[in-house]
Image: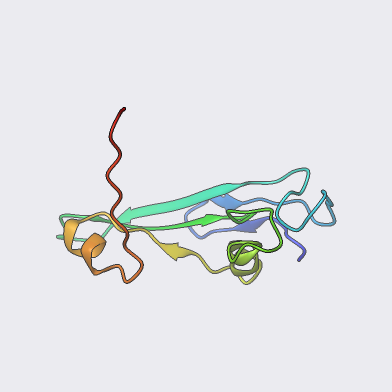
Length: 102
């Protein structure tokens, strides 16, 4: 999945070096690893954002998250950020975990 500089209309850019090989699709040697774009819509109380982990969340080939976001990034697709309570609760993949100290 080759990457390259992708200039955006607002002057921002996404960067990844073409032809860089690491030890897997999700562990290359160079490039942007986390990219987030955030803006405000007129008259909105919440920001609008998109995020991508360009090298995905897992380098384990048996994981469902192996190269998932890398493939999205190669198609210039991002995942929506959720900022307000209604967006968070509407997420079909929402999992609530309570962590307590021992």
